[in-house]
Picture 1: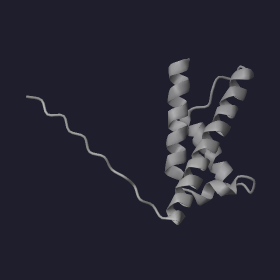
Picture 2 (picture 1 turned 180 degrees about the vertical axis):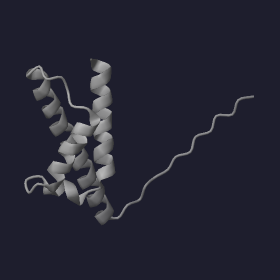
Picture 3 (picture 1 turned 45 degrees about the horizontal axis):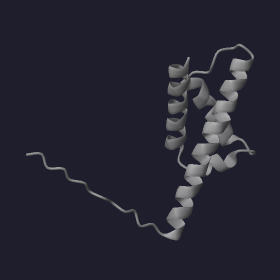
Picture 4 (picture 1 turned 90 degrees about the horizontal axis):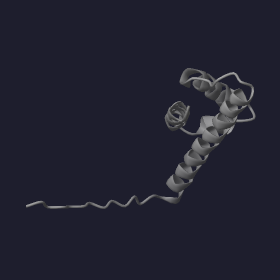
Length: 94
């Protein structure tokens, strides 16, 4: 006999936590779009694509710049994981 069981969890956050999560998610989305634009630019100029390490160097420079300093206010690990996902997606596409 096979028993199927599901567990449902609900995350109850405070307004401050919701704000922090929204900012982190926005930063991850920004990093994805910015890195994708860089990779597309490299492809358009027939230079191949940057590897994960190259994208991480760019992320570090973005986080340290004044223009994109807001990236430093959220955790870096989700941003780095986003770059890993993008690298894997481009690898599988080409």
